[in-house]
Length: 474
Image 1 (cartoon, rainbow, N blue to C red):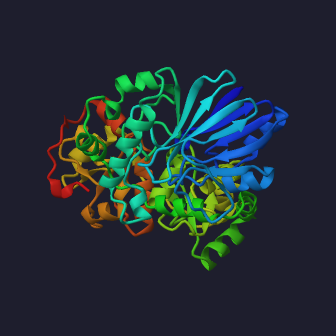
Image 2 (image 1 turned 180 degrees about the vertical axis):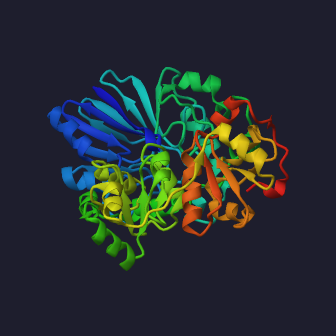
Image 3 (image 1 turned 90 degrees about the vertical axis):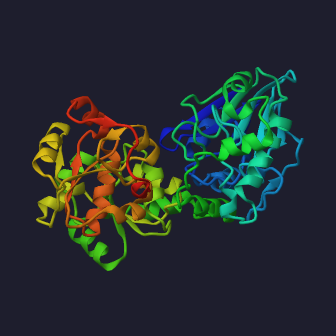
């Protein structure tokens, strides 16, 4: 028997490869499926099943492409009704993979079809639980997503189902079972997830707040719902893609890999409603970029921020990337359902600049320069674009919080005529924020390199706890 966790950091997502006697089950695969095909080929094995723990919201699963390319059966637990061929497994049913068995455990709560898969080895021992978004390391799945698809499923109702699923289906299992969740820290599918990607059930019973043995259902519902922020807008759109189907990843990649020389790139940009996304490093972008392009760096939490910033997953997209990374960017966009990349700038921004095309810049200053600027300009305003929870923890005295997460609301605190000194935690989010606003005509925003980390280390600012008026928190 072989168990392999295939973890993707930018999505904080875990897919799983289980093999026994030449037969394979893949659990919650990513959109691009070649890695699974190559593993099976190397093992001289056949992919027999694609097991889905639920209809994912934060990424588009590779279940349909994988089934088409291998003949594998797509499996969901009870209550699932997708628009493609699948097998509806019953609660308590066993699925055979070589000499091992996988028990289907229906655990509604995160969603109504949420299902965990319990792996039983050749000797009959229960060894691992693939818990999807039902149970994370340190947390449980948020119960407010399914209501975006079915309004009658309130978050309180779903949280109650989740409580019952955990108490009646999961907690009675053996303490030495290994928990393999679908996500870890950084995912928007929970709020207190650990950076660890696996743990024993016994350890989770002892440390996970949601598994406290004395917790009542009302206490659980209150605890799980406390502190939830609105999910990214693309979540329900990804759910519908996972239910209804989507274009093959091969089609998406072919559509996106059109290399345009500067003149052709400019013509396509002018003739379409395509959004230009520049995925270079924030500080590289600041020194020169195509006017009206926005910066979302590929070397950060790229896909989730694309999902948070671009409401329409059918938005046509043109790319400016570091040379050689075009395919990577197109793939990572497709992971979260942005399938309509229509091409990229051949030879990157340098080709654009060398062609004599118009460029733009963003002023970026250090923390020490920020201190000088702030003292010199009495009207300069420090704008902190971190999440409200980060800001509440600690911030520069007198700063205004305008979270990137809710940029359309955050714009309401900004006066185009005033100067703003903008920072986040490390410099990634502030450049996204400024580039989007600059494309909308806000020209008085200055970036602070290194963000709050550098500001705090400079020792030049008074750091205070939350004292900003509630009206300014978004």
